[in-house]
Structures are given as structure tokens and as C-alpha cells.
Length: 381
Image 1 (cartoon, rainbow, N blue to C red):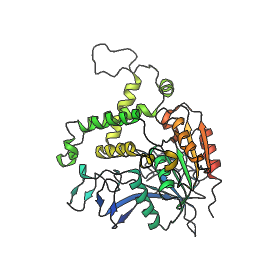
Image 2: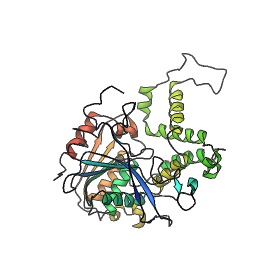
Image 3: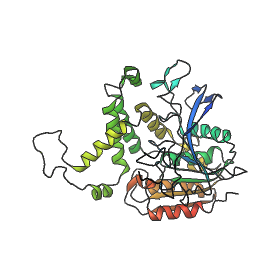
Image 4: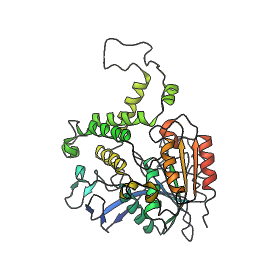
């Protein structure tokens, strides 16, 4: 971290928390009698609350989307490339809100927080949450902050699914929806990847049916393997080849030990997995992948996506990346086609980038320039 903050950063930020006493009935049929949402804000809300922008995070994201918590921070928020003065999500124009989703592990009510009904950590007893549940809780947070209508709701990956669901669920409460590297539902292959990741966690001897904290342990091995698998799917083959190729870690192959790390890509994945264990909760990972699996707006409309998207009134931007094989451009085009069926105002941009699914987090010139040009069109008065 430099001695001074970058001029295009939102600077030092402080997380906030809002407590809700109003019960929230979830799609799974259970009710949270009370809950907390942790969030961060950037920029200033204008006098008529017309410049509010909601950022929805992806699977392993959280509320810390931009800026630094203190001068000792080595890394800024996860979308620092796009949030800040003069950036696509310009804090000179927008008041930006980014909450940690329900079921998260960064302050919002979830498996690591206390169940008020028992006085003990929720653990595996925290209910399954869905994208519509998150939208409802985000709506309530917005109203608590004095926001009746969002200028835009924005997200990438699982966050993009939330931005789409917002446009369906509350069509009169957002003017724009920005959906990046997303899909109308997961493919069988994607569900399969998520299931393998969950099984790595669920079968870890330290999982203890989700109550590992009560046993003063965590399923480190399972969570590490889940993250390693997930990370592979977020990168493209080309990106991994450029970054690692078949480069050896020690200069020559070790034929004596099967557990020896020989290739740089092995070392990288192990590092990512071990680092993830220290910052994320296993039960939350299971919940978030379930929310991904369950997202399917068309399921209540005879699998007709056009019918499902009929309520949308917001102007929409969809962006995809050529090398993203997890949520390919074809999946974004499905959404665009369904919107055009109802003559909705929708724009589509396909970015030529070799970075894979994680491209939506990267400062790719064509991507950031195009995104900023679109966001600059959004009126904030």
C-alpha cells in the first residue's frame, strides 16, 4: 500500500450495518424473524435520492467493493477497477451501495452469525437463500437509506443474476439494469461443478454436518479443494497457458514424491485455496452455490424466458466475454433475445478478452471504456 491513496480511489471506507426487525419470509418457506445486512457506500446521495446505484456481488464477493479500510490495506475492494472518481461507476455522480448478501460471512446474517432464537451460531441451520430473497432484502436496505428507486442495479456473474432479478421482481424501482457475465440459469455442467465443490466440503471429516465451529475446527481441506476447482473454471485455457504454461516450480520434475508440487500452476492453485480458507466460510460457500443452482426465472413460466422477462421496464445493458466458458456469450444472448421479444430497451456488448469468466473484474480497456460510456448516459438528476 502506498503512503498516499490513488487519486481515482474512493479512499478510506468504513463498513456499516443495518438491523431489520421486520421478518423476512424466504423462498424455502422458512422465515428470518430478524437479520442484519452489512454494507458499504461510496459517493453522496443527492437531495432527491435519484443517483443511487446498487452493486450486487458474486459468489465469493462481499460488501467491500472499493477503497481501503485503513492505510495498511494491501488490496482495495474487489471492484476497485470500476468504482471511483471518473471510473465507470463514477462516485462523483453516483451514490453507490454494496451489501454483503444474506447468508454471507462478512457481517450480514449467515452461518457464522448468532441465531437469536438459540443464542448459538447458525452454522448449517441457516436457511437456504435465493436470488429473489437477496433482492427483497436489498430493497428493504434501500428504503432504510431513503432510496425508493435505484438509478441502476449492477452486477457480474451471480451479481448479474441479481441485477436481472431486480428488473423482473421490482420493475418500477430501478431505471437501468447492468448484467455482466451472467446467465438466465445454470447449465448442467455448471451445476455439476458446484456439486463437486460442495461434496469436497460436505465430505471433509472436519465438516461435522455444518457445525464445525462448535467443534472448534473448519473443513479446511474441503473448502480449499472447492476453491481450487472454482478458480480453474473462472479462467480460460488461454489465460492459464499465458500465465503458467508448463513452467516448473523448481526447474526440474520430481519423480520421487507424488505429493510434490512440480508445476507453477499447481503452486498457484494451492496458494489460492489456502488463502481462501482464511477469508471465507464453508457453509456460506455451500449456500451461495445453491443460490446459483436454483436461479431460474423461467421455471414458473413453463420454461419460457420471454414470459419471465415480460415485466421488465428498465433499460438494460448486457456484457459478456469471448473466453468466458462458464457463462458464455451465448447465455447473455438468450437474455437479450427474450427481452427483444417484448421490444425492451436492451444493449449488448461482447468483449474480446482472453481472461475467462474473471474478466469482469479486470481493467480491460474496451470493457471499462464501453461500460463507462453507457453509465455516463444514466441521468442522475
